[in-house]
Length: 241
Ligand code: BJW
Image (tube, rainbow, N blue to C red; front, side, top):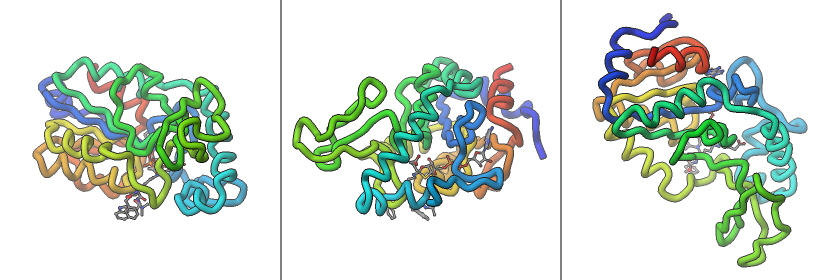
């Protein structure tokens, strides 16, 4: 089990031209955001497993229940702050000729730490969108309107629920960046949810060096060139030292 940064990773980090970072819920764990899986816990809301309440099927059946779940989530998130991993990753964006941050997280903490142009594969809880015309509404600034001012239809959380398609163009952009990168970090994701979990495979096929940072092994661990066992906030901050 590797818990420290190898000399090889330090060398590659210094010389990399195109870096891609894929993050998951584990990056926000040290900020106090519950993860979906791992640690023996299964997220449950009012007796419903999260993959039931966070599903496209539930949205069709009971939109008010889905809003109640996301209103609760925003309430929890509103008092939470980015942690050292978010800040360190934000600092990386100016250290390489090309840098891409792809996140599965919907909490907005990367942006709060200063990351720019984040590719959000699964949306963001701080936005709503019209169920029909996709007009966006910023939930951080104001509460959601009863109906879409453009077409009169209902708003929904602007997140990608199970069984739904990713935002148009998001995966295409992420996969093209993965296919061009020379160093790829996979941080704090169980790597169970597709198509996000396919990105490191694309990077590997393109010849990139892949480094996973996670306290637990994942289905991607065997594919990685380096697996560092540890918490994101502790490991990520050591890489450039
Ligand atoms: C730490 C740490 C610390 C702890 N430091 N680390 C191919 C094969 C099989 C199935 C599919 C497939 N392609 C598509 C599918 C279907 C499905 C899917 O993948 N299902 C699998 C689960 C079986 N995918 C979809 O439905 C996607 N849509 C899609 O593909 O559309 C096309 C299509 C439609 C229909 C049929 C077929 C194709 C959409 C996926 C949307 C995911 N949405 C969610 C909910 C968002 C809203 C909400 O927040 O409620 O996104 S699910 C949930 O999982 C959330 C996350 O972004 C996502 C990933 O989770 P993540 O980030 O990996 O977190 P965890 O909790 O799983 O893991 C945390 C990790 O952190 C653990 O490893 C810990 O060890 C670690 N950790 N502390 C570092 N301090």
